[in-house]
Length: 193
Image 1 (cartoon, rainbow, N blue to C red):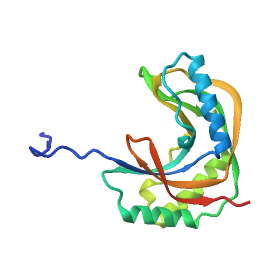
Image 2: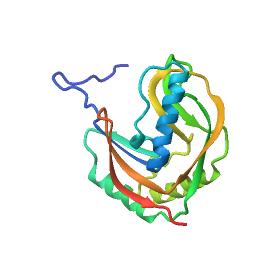
Image 3: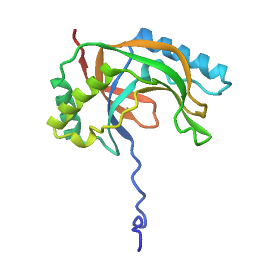
Image 4: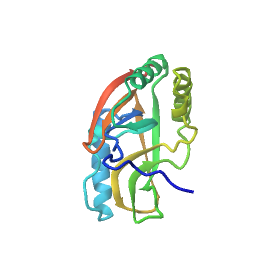
């Protein structure tokens, strides 16, 4: 069995753009999370800075990495988002640690041991709208709610913390410029109660 390689002179395209749907904490909570992350990184003697407050988020659906965003995908995702009707809810995290504990490094995250039923129900409702917009391939069933506080840090096991609860007020369609630490808000949908 042979594998097909790249054609000579043509390097594999490296994605530069990512599209995803996420919930961002408001400015007050985002600043608290950044300070919280810095404190926990220092307590564990981990070098590096936490994710900047304006980039902290909980990803609901990853819509792909591309060398150029497909315009139709952006329109379809924005249309699905526009159809969403939901009330604000709270998100609760009670654990801090690293994903990928089997390697020496991983993303340092906040997550929850259980709960977040409102978040799961909200995500399921959004999945229905993604399916209706012909984006069902992105509406995956597997979901571990988390907020990445720092990337590629020495792995540490999860530990219980005093619960951190914050309000979700809107959902955002984000165009991320990979490697440039820049998020562009393409569309958003406020949650009304």
